[in-house]
Image (cartoon, rainbow, N blue to C red; front, side, top):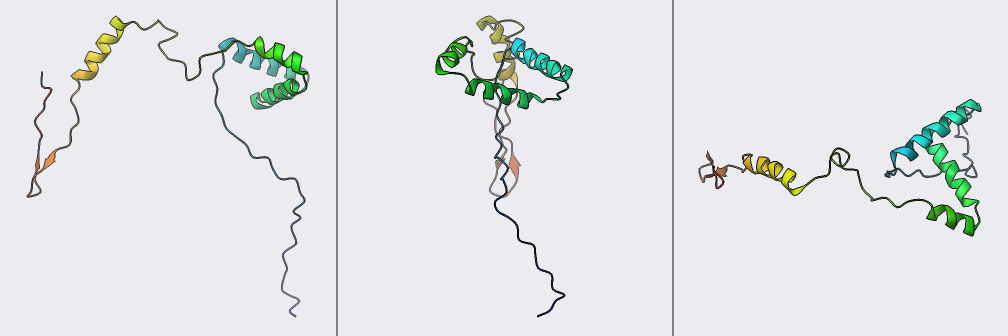
Amino acid sequence: MNSSRRTKPEVSHDKDKKPKLVRDSFTIPKEEYAAIESLKIRAMTMGLAIKKSELLRAGLMALTGLSDAKLKTTLVAVPTLKTGRPCAQASAAPATPAAAAPAAKATAARKSRKPKAVLANGAAAALPESNQA
């Protein structure tokens, strides 16, 4: 045997494995989002630096510890929100059919980007426009 050969140290498989992480997104009212920041500030005054995700995870731990009756009361108190991303115009003004009409005309006025037809000899020829105004 060659004593100069190094062997790899055995890796113990009994170590705790890191938990799999999941990324997600959700919609939350501005007031409740601001509450996250105020809770972070409260934690800092107690000497704890905490991230948003850690704060939300702590909230889940607190909910998990509630009895069924308290959990139901808490969940019923949370208003239901429309899911999805908020519309940029929703906060400015409600959309009306009359307001949507100019946008539709502007879209129709754009030139379509149809591909050029390729002739048998390989030369390109423009296709005729059917929506010429």
